[in-house]
Image (tube, rainbow, N blue to C red; front, side, top):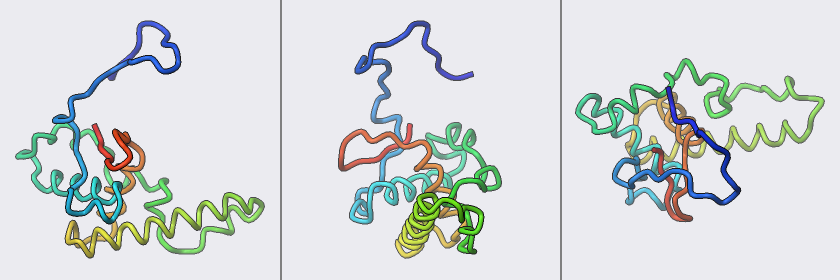
Amino acid sequence: SGVFAERDFKPGSFVVSVPKALCIHGIKSLLGLGAEVATAAALLRESRLAKNSMFAAYIASLPAQSDLQSHPFMWQQKNTSAMFASSPRITRRLRLAKMQAAASSQALLSAGATDCQQEARWALSVVRSRATNLSFARCSIC
């Protein structure tokens, strides 16, 4: 299943269009916290609506928290730098990802989007791995 091309495309070619109404957009009141946080909050809102969400089928197709344990946003704050001791660059990037995850999940908790740290990290991981920037001010998942 999925979408496949039947021919090659030149760089910059228009390939597909998804109507904005079919994308999960960030909650506008939370855009000040960043597009990813606002979109993760919208994903959490739609996820809570379950089968009453117009995005229920899409949300059901997303990986569960347990399936995303390898995503840096899901890693706990324990010291993982020993795994990458031979690569200072990876260690710095990992530290940055952990700080971003902590700050973004705290923003979701503070905004009332969720009361569970792992759920916040799940939503952020999903948005980070599936987001499409439709403009500089917005982040959406389609």
